[in-house]
Amino acid sequence: MIDRIASIATSTLSNALDDAGYHDNVMQGIHSVVAGSRFAGPAVTVREASGEFGSFRSEDFRVGAIIDAAETGDVIVIDGGGALCSTWGGMASFAAKFKGVAGLVVDGAVRDLEEIIEFDFPVFARHMVPTTGRLRMKVEAINEPIVVYGVRVEPGDIIVGDGTGLVCLPRGDAEKIVGVAEQIGQDDASALEDMKAGMSFSEAMSKYTKI
Image (tube, rainbow, N blue to C red; front, side):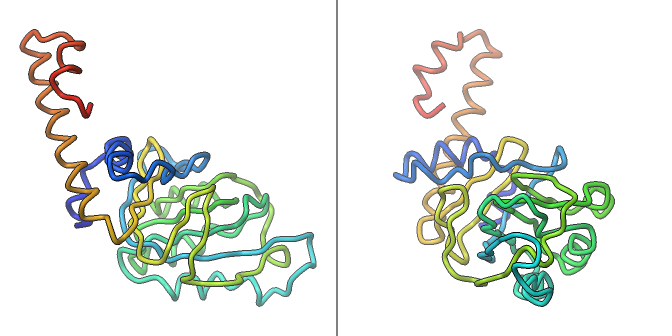
């Protein structure tokens, strides 16, 4: 199914989510830190707490444990509560890319943009800051349900990111949602061909109701 999703835009998937009754599964406010990044894969979920410098011990940071929990093709999804200190940087990007992790989503901050670009690791985040999360952040849970910018994410849910944004496909209904998205994509392609042949946009909208 991940291979089927690879060519589907998040905007099309969002339409399919609406049709399936999931109207709030778009992660607003979190965007790719590098233009052109894209991924799709099952979620490895992480919940973190944050505080002032010195609130936590260095060993509470546990970025290594996060990477260890992910398998090839997984997407790491971190609920950092929007914190303005970085939970992820260049070395973590290298390690995750080397392991085959598909990408990262952070409701919070990351850093080391140049290294993220160098290692070609897809990262989506709310903030880019220099400040380290060490001694400011603590990993509280791995692979438990989390909430990312208002969207509930469970381990194994399918996360898709592209230049438009991020969507979460609940794993129990992912097959159905992808099927609807594929039909929407076919309708879009047919509408484009009709417009190339002279049909107006309004006429195409009337003919293909899911555009």
